[in-house]
Amino acid sequence: MIARYSRPAMAAIWSEEGKLATWLAVELAATAAWAELGVVPPEAAELIAGAAPPPVERVAELEAVLHHDTAAFVDAVSETLGAEGRWFHYGLTSSDVVDTALAVQIRAAGRLILEGIERAHAAVVARAEEHRLTLQMGRTHGVHAEPTTFGLKLAGWAFELDRGRGRVARALEGMRVGKLSGAVGTYAATDPELERIACERLGLEPAPTSTQILQRDRHAELLCALAVVASSLDTFALEIRHLARTEVAEVQEPFGKGQKGSSAMPHKRNPVVAERICGLARVVRGTALVGLENVALWHERDISHSSAERVVVPDAFLALDYMLDRFAWLVEGLVVRPERMRRNLEASHYLFFSQRVLLALVESGLARDDAYRLVQRNAMRAWDEELDFRELARADQEIASRVELDAVFDLDAYTKHVDTVFNRLKEPANV
Image (tube, rainbow, N blue to C red; front, side, top):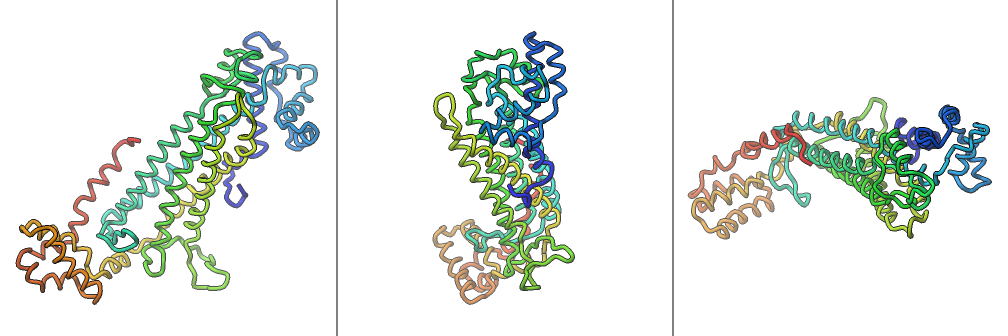
């Protein structure tokens, strides 16, 4: 992910320095475990424990000759350890280090993602409460349907974010495993107890079985969970973009002092952050497809997954971390215009009351299709001639003689059950 869309804490985890430091942590955990098992001499383990992550430049220099990044890393560390360096990487294969380290990196990155979801969720809940009773036109197919409230819309976002948080947490738990089982997972050059001790030191569980690698269904599940959260943010940002259109103008992105919306048109105040979120969601969804493609590998492993994974795993975390931060900022500072919402609600000539009139006619004893046709006749005239539907209904004796229309034309009907949804926001998550 380019620096423009990378936040410092997440970028540090996926940097070359961060990767090499994590590889070293795995190697040191393995060496300490070997010492505990009496294989590596204590003095050698003590010396190795003081090793520092090798310079990125030195590893790159060695890799240019060796054409193997893990071997270059091992040589770069070993050359600083003297004779005791022979115990460094003892019994391990490259994927023991790389896959276990990736699990450690994912755990750290996952904490940042969960924190980001929590902030976004809190922001949405706060604004939902603020606009619990702010009437807004609900739209289906992009066309006016019936009134809702802006708070109810945001409450729906909050529940979706909470489900996303649950999916990510479960997928992260599935990734909290390491493997030090050797070349094809038989422990021929290692020891199951070595794996248990080293993984415990790293805060991981030993995988119940592995080949030369951890099976990639775990990684695919994680990337899919991240992609679902990104798609939720895409949904929310797209709604903000629609509501920010000039013809609608019910919300507006925060616009800072000195900000420019266009290099050519000084009047422009565009929903650029929402658009950015929508764009980056496409990137994160793309990583999920790569994760699924990486599940199928030859025999005990090939490395067709490796090159793709080096790109998509960091990019998924970096992009989603950035998206969550920007979305929380967007919601926290979103300009909401209740008066414009009310004007838009009235702009459809109160046609949204059509269902309430229909149901009242049915309750009066009229056949449903007859009632539907009667209401539709007036509704289409209100639509075509831009007349007040309420007045047309009052003037139609076939309707007015059957129904108490003052009770039907009641906006409070659309908010009377709002508290039911908001009370659920306070209940423990059930995901």
